[in-house]
Image (cartoon, rainbow, N blue to C red):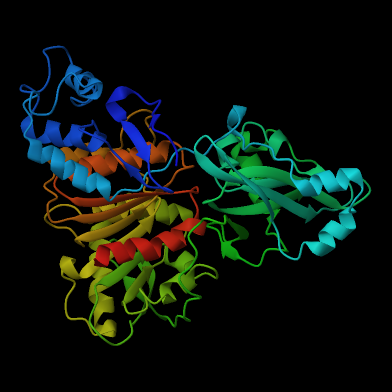
Length: 493
């Protein structure tokens, strides 16, 4: 069991963690949290809580009393805060799953490993050909060790490249986060063979998609420009020795590495038969939609998913046939193109388009109503942002939403580093007591982790019921598909 650790973040955004078991955290004693911070400022106002010094960023920056709480000099009652608020906050946080950051070496790269199979190759105990023949399924797994409080495992990536080619390993988000230099991601050629290897320490509970990029020469700074990054994606290929694959948002296949402690699918998933239609929406656009009726039995809420073409793709669609989801009626709304997707999912009129889709699809599903109580929205990235927005306010489309890696940084199409997105700020003026959310984010998504935590805190402050779950992965369908099953299950209660 890990010992108590103190976060390195600013005091207004952290607390002391005590890790119990794997991926579970509790908070000892009266502690400070972002959710409590926003709940207090929204419900009790500034005058009774803050000193007269200036407070910036929406009354959430400088405040002496949280430091007194953290240091033990004061408690919630002496700060003028009813104890019941803290108890409610602690109950909400007890349902959360927050992770320690993935340990990385200098420069933000995974730690290099030196597994036993490399030692045997160097010592001549086994030839590269024998290793390739014995490795029926890749990647290879080696020893386990804790690094920075996280259980890590040696992972050996092995592939064959053409003569005179360089091979880059592209691991979703881990490679993306350090695109300024690909040097540490180049696989090492095995002399006198077509084999290339790269051995890394990765989290035992991780789940990542990955690809091999074979080129005559891989520009070390290819990720620094849009053109270079597109070339990396265009030349990527899945691992031929790994049968688990998914289709990525660019329509290309990627392999999936699942650590020994990562969540496994609950079953293979039943086949899904879809019916399709084209819906004419109020904005003048025609949108392809797909739907399937759930199995007979108690009528469960309707599940509406954005980016429908991806949820019908191999490796992902099977999750909609999982036992916990196959009883639900499901509607998929296609994105059509990246440009259409960006415009639709960030538009304040998107709710009107979704309502029209439901009105036309419900008769096919033999459903009589699109009552928000009977609808669950689910989306990823910009879709997660849209799902959250459409589950808020008096004219909401749904009472419940699953937000996976939601783009809560969004502010009129651009990021403002260090500042929450527009929806987070708007929650101060929204009454959300009728809304329920499951917010999921990959711990390797950098800024999006903090933004998801801020949305969780702001939504709770506005009265919504929220569960916040962090997954060991990146901006990736590799874990989104597993998160869909668990997230919808949580929303069903």
